[in-house]
Length: 475
Image (cartoon, rainbow, N blue to C red):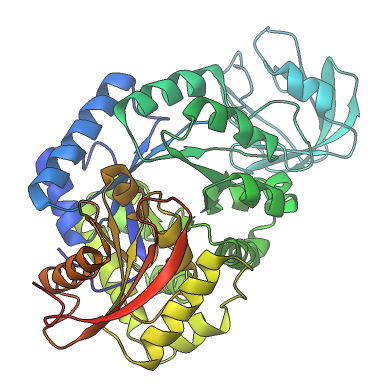
């Protein structure tokens, strides 16, 4: 099944979409990658979901990527004697290490790392920012705050710390156990939540040992401040706009989204735009015009993938949400202004053979109006470099390794095909032309351009370009 769009669709699966039949419908509606949210999924259910996705993959004959999204550290206040309390702006309120139930003047904060890190002047946002506190005094055992805005605080509400750099890694004990479990099932991508610094990625990389690629979720100001270093150590980025909009001024988020998207594109790392894209479709069969514009902006910006969360996981219209996202993306990509916007954001290639070949392949393909760029890729690197160029013609990535094809299913403009390794150059050309014909990317007489590494089966050696005719070179 060939997609008629370049941006990919990432659909979260949950109670509304976990059956094999529903997963098949979501794929047919346009989902390219499925996300399993480990905040709401135990190991047994996760293994069941992976098995069902793999069954759909086998049935449709197309590689499907799976992203496991780790929960990350969840910081919460303790409980109140009366479940909730009403606070008044200007009053004093204290968070401390006393486990007694809270009242209108204090509450237990079961996180010594917060108590020891917050300084006077730092903000504490409770319940997704509905209550804002400002620290006036902190001594390591308690934080005395002034209520700035909001009025209600209740049991176990989350705490966000936009001004505080916490000395804890992004992986909790739960995350480590989840990571071991998802790696054992062979998921393709693992997303790390609440990354603050590049070091947060190191532990996950060490555990993964290449068994899955690592996606850094950018949802904290500390991560935005160290974006270049985080990009360097990650395989992909997710712009997690929900938490980003809590910890940073909400009006800053669109600009940050553009900055992250462009930085990832320059680096040739996939970037996913996530959170509340078609939020109203959780309960309504159609989105708002504002949501349609939001999805369109991500597509115009050249993001690799756009993501549905509760819309597909728990909403009343999961298939309709995927189909709507598919329609919006397809329409944007046929807009007369789309190619110009994508081209204007293109960055200079790095001084490597693979980048030079990818640039040349794009320019030749667009100048000669070729049917497709066909890239042989074992590790996926050649596919990544080809997608970084954002060519106007389709990219067909041929790989003998199923895991590579699954990983590349997240990649902009890339149609992945699992194909045995070519035996020699002639076989390589013949195979590429035959697959272009079979997969609907060319008809007899069309030309394609083929990129590969010679000698064959040498990772990172992309050094060959070949123009071939579909049909005449196909035996």
